[in-house]
Length: 177
View 1 (spheres, rainbow, N blue to C red):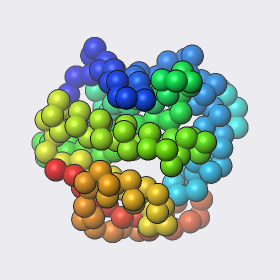
View 2 (cartoon, rainbow, N blue to C red):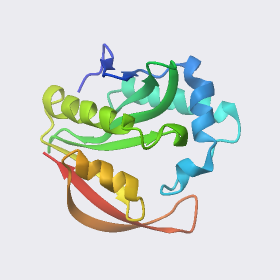
View 3 (tube, helix red, strand yellow):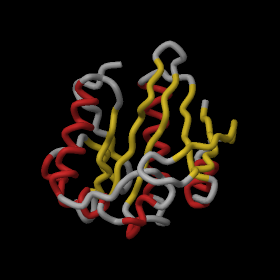
View 4 (cartoon, rainbow, N blue to C red):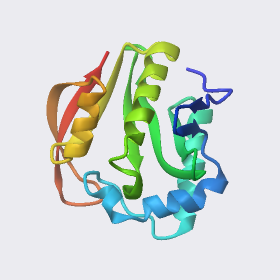
């Protein structure tokens, strides 16, 4: 995979584009919100420097063709409201895993469905992946509903121990092909 030049994707309401340092305030607002970590083993950003380091790390991974991650910009407000990625790319099996998150104030409005459908098409049609996987916590009903609305089917379950917490996560594995 080669993500140069970076592929910007426009949808009806969103611009999916490369993250940059100007996104740090919007992303910090999202990453410091504990509601964003309710179903994932992540830690809340306490300082904007952590968000800046996150942006640098994500962009370095894109430049090294390890993964691709887009900032989700809301066209009307010009605000970055989330991110979506394809990572855990397996070139041999032609598969990848989706990661996504959207700030709580923009959840339930169809924006993540719009982003997910566009990125799934990019993964299958441009990256020529044969399968896209998504792992979601069993209690994350909105994410389960989103994946099913986007044509993903459940293919398995796995339990994962938390790294940042002592919680056991009951993950459902979804696949789109």
